[in-house]
Length: 94
Image (cartoon, rainbow, N blue to C red; front, side, top):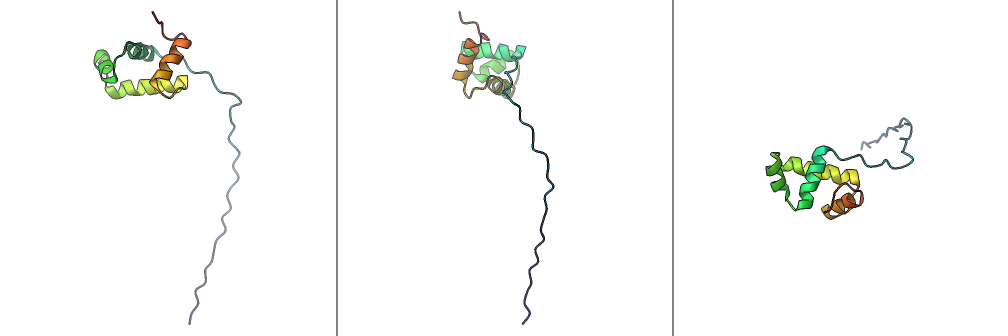
């Protein structure tokens, strides 16, 4: 009877330098003119589809702008976006 032998190769990983982490969080970037315009329309109560029609852009573009604003301001929903925009004086409440 023949016996099977198993050979294993040892792999050595090259050591890579550890990535450098920023020492502190960066401040949010300022909103673009278009983001500011969309923020004001959100505040007014328009839905993404209505904003898209009004600005003659696609709904996906509106969604992308909204997502970018939320990322910049570091919030996770529209209510937080509007609250942060008011507190940060990005929106003028009349």
